Image 1: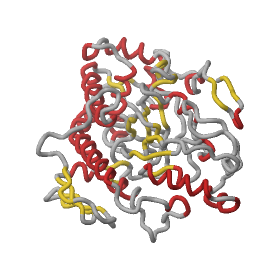
Image 2 (image 1 turned 30 degrees about the vertical axis):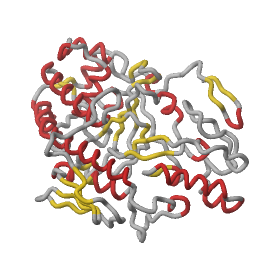
Image 3 (image 1 turned 60 degrees about the vertical axis):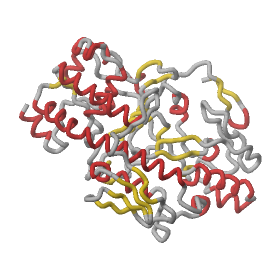
Image 4 (image 1 turned 45 degrees about the vertical axis):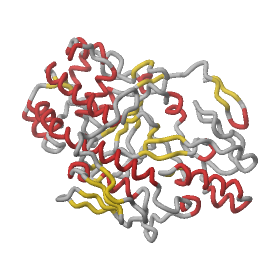
Length: 422
C-alpha cells in the first residue's frame, strides 16, 4: 500500500505501479489518421468545397503546388477507396478529380468537431481499419498523449472518426470499443469480461458489459509515461459507483448520439448569446465575476468558471477551440495556400457550436469533484493488480487481439478501380 500511495503523488493521487495499462485492457489500438496536408480539414464545411473547386480548376504546376504533395500522396497517385464510403475516386486526382465528395464530421482533438473531405487521394494515412469499423454503433476512446503539464482527462470518447489532434503535440492512440461493424466483438482482452463478472457480479443490477468497462475507463484512467493506466477496484460498490459516474461522462461526451439526450444545463444556467459576433475577434476574453465570454463584439453568458478553466494537457479547451478557427495571421502558423481559403465572416453555426461546447465543459466540470473522490478511494483501497489479471489468465494479451479483425465479405475498390475482398 505504501508503494502505491507514494506512486500516486506523481499522478493526480491515483497512480499505482500495478495498475493495468489501458493497452492491455483494450488491446487493439490504431494511430490517429494523418492527413499530410491541413487543407483537407476545416471547422466549416463551406471552406472545404471552395478549396476543392480551386484545386480542380488549377492545372499542372499550380495544381501540384496547391495539392502539397508528399511521399505518400500527390495529384498523380492512385489509391484504394476509403472503406465504408462511396466518396472519392481511386484514379489519380490530376487525371479525373470526380465530383466533390460530401464532407464528413470528425472529432478534432478533445471536444472539438471539424469537417473532412473523405477522399483517400488527399489523405496520407487515413487508417482504413478505423473506417471499416466506424458505424452507428461504434464508440472511439481517444487518448490525448502524455506531457509534463498533464491536467484534465487522459482520454475522451466520441462517435465520430477522431483525427487524434493533441494539445500536447503527442497524439495518443485511438481504441474502438468494437473490433467489427455492428457492435460485434468487444475490443477487450480475452477473458476480461468473464473475470470482471466473476468479481463484481450483477453490479448495479446488470452484468459487467463492454459499455460499463468503457464507462469505468472514462471515469478513472490517468496518463503515465508508459501510457494510460486504469485502476480496477477490489470493492464491488466502488466499481458500481465508478461505472455510474462514467456513464454520465459518456452521455455528456457523446452529445446525444446513440439515442441519448443532448447535454443541457438547468434553466438560468444555460449560456446565451447576449451580443452577436459581427466581426472577427482577435482573442477570447473571460470575466469570471460576470461569467461573460467575449469574442470581439460578441458576448456569451453565463459561462461558468469551470467551463472556462477546463483543460486537457494543460491547455484551456475553449482557447484551443478558438485558436483552431482564428489563427494568428502574422504568426508562424499563419495559413497559406488552400488552407487560407476560409469564411469571410464569422459563421453563425460556430456560435451555436460554441454554446454546446460550453454546456459540455460546464457539465464535465461539475463532475470533477466526484472523480476526485473516486480517485482518492482507489488510492486508499485495495485494487486488482496486473499480477492478479495474469493469474486469472487475462494477461498477457494474445498477439491476435492487438491486430484488427478481418472483415470478410466486404468488397472494396482498390487503386484505379481494382477490387479486393478483405
